[in-house]
Length: 340
Ligand SMILES: [Zn+2]
Image (cartoon, rainbow, N blue to C red; front, side, top):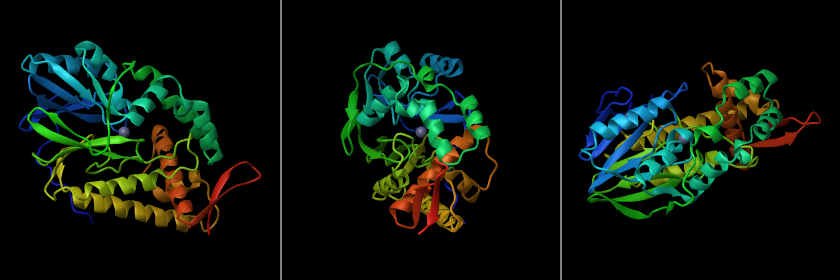
């Protein structure tokens, strides 16, 4: 059994805040999904504050932000918004915060671009293209209908972003308040996710790249059918290995924790087991849809089924790259994976 992460803090209520490191405050915001919360961070920054991630665009989140502005911030302004990646629970209120405070938005280039593409109905936001892709990978009609019904329209949820932004690049160092922070980018979950590492304080804001309990969703996307996001993800986990063993990790979901290296090991083992299970299951040709019960033991709701087929395709493509599975399209137009 993998070692449990060491959590120094109890869970917060929605909207509650806690100073987890001097000058770094944790806020837990609600999400309208099975994964019901996201963590955001407020860092004391000279005469104001830097915000890391923005929460999901709902009335409730905006109300919580208003009360945070009124109570927590010592009447100091927000100086800057940093967004780890383009997913709506992280970026969707960036436009609102930026307009309110007239401040810059910091993101990596790919994440900013991907957020803009999704807002304007680009390829990965095209639900018909996505459903065609799922159908080719064996998703049944009830799964398609369920996904269409439960999937929010991200073009409406992500508020307009400013036309300009400040690009963050991998390994870049910059100052927040009195401390240096460094950008550590990673792929697989999103194209150029930015984690932030503060050596002075031995703190890592890991975003969605390293979570203490659930494994980060790694999905193949319809705009890149031969992509290998799981390899990108596992490779980028290695970039955290050089951090100190006792680094304090501030993740986007669950609670702040110690035990980064054990968690990286456990994630590697978790995916290796799933990869082996997928190879075994493909003794007879299988679609990605048919792989899902071999990779996920628990019941999945319709929204989660979309994540699950994305994960199944990602694992299968990894194995195709490694030469352990082959991928072919049948006369019925359906894509199946078989042992080589
Ligand atoms: Zn995410």
